[in-house]
Image (tube, rainbow, N blue to C red):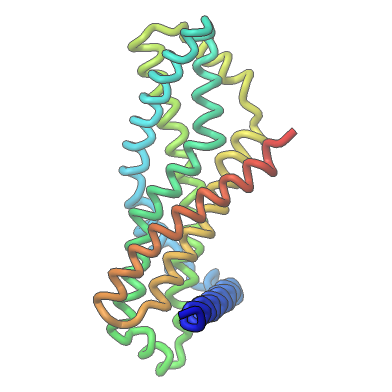
Length: 261
């Protein structure tokens, strides 16, 4: 009994180390294969359209409702302390530092990440990647690298869109609907936001790191999936689960580093 238990733990650890090693190797292969991508910019532009522009609608709609809810809840909370004029600052910092990049990354994982995993998995199941290798075409350079960099570039842009639309949503609720003073709303927001610390680090650096993590996880899960419908389906599920956990872990680590006194 104990021997079987220890053997199972050992087998799990061995598989985990092998998967980690394969993931690290795949990551550096993607980076090393990216040099030729700039000679074929149409590959990157095409993936930016599929990955980025098709995610704009869900990002914008979600940002609008998150901003509206944040404005409503923020007003109720601040009214307890008689500080409703600080609603703009509360909303801006919440969106720029946390909600904008984190919610964008989670939506990106569910929308674009699963699509990438399924696409790569189906290409592998259809032996398209093997056919590329037989024709002396590097599938990592031709298929994975454009999608990876498209995700890295698209994520900060989507994060900025989410944050901007969220601020508009909170303005509609706080100023237009409830009646918070418009001048105080914008002046408190302007005075409380640090461009480099809150917008630069909070929105764009976090979003870029999340983009690297989520896009690579999606590509890796599709690339290592077995060429069967069941495993490709399981790979899309693993993409969402692993990406979500990675986003929360990275968010905690970056928040501790960026915003600590």
